Image 1: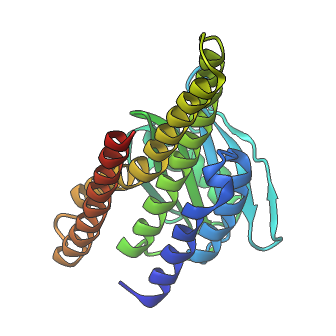
Image 2: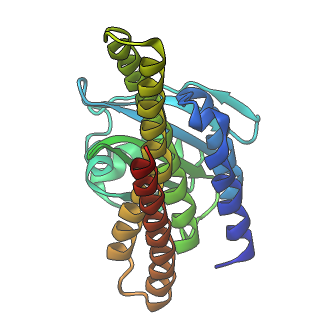
Length: 262
């Protein structure tokens, strides 16, 4: 793996200790992550589109423009305008389109979005949470982009972070409900506080220490499927998969020990 990619992954992985991520401050975390991804991949623009299942549409809730150094809320992607492109986003882990594509299915998106904005290359990766499509992390370039395996690793890591932050948000909501349940119990205040702390600690540990390597492992498996013909990419991904599997094993051991001590 190249040194530049190592630095890109390192800058993103540092966010795993971010108070925004651990505190489930989802939109604030996105506002921090999206510019880092944009700069790491030397892109023109990066955005996160939340998939609204009830409306069957993607809504850009965070967009970063490198040229203006401006972060903002984007617009909703109307499936009726780019029907083929919209369906591709929901079916492919990675979507890579460049302005020279001659596919009639993608002509509307290419003409009305890419050429209109003088883009040469567009890439999106699906973000999954709780076995469902949660959103799309999208990156745009104004130059021809040969999307490499190293770039894919950066986006897989970022997508995993987004899922992890959303998990933290859900954990906080669940923790609030647990505390309400505990407060409704009869008994000594100390016992209620002790039970509340146990519930909170276990939920926190599961969300952060186990969910992150698991999300990355699942994404790496999909990447291996996409790149199995390339021996170099296959070995690189396999090594990364081994590392994340060891991280997951360590996390499970620690959690087991915590449960036994409790």
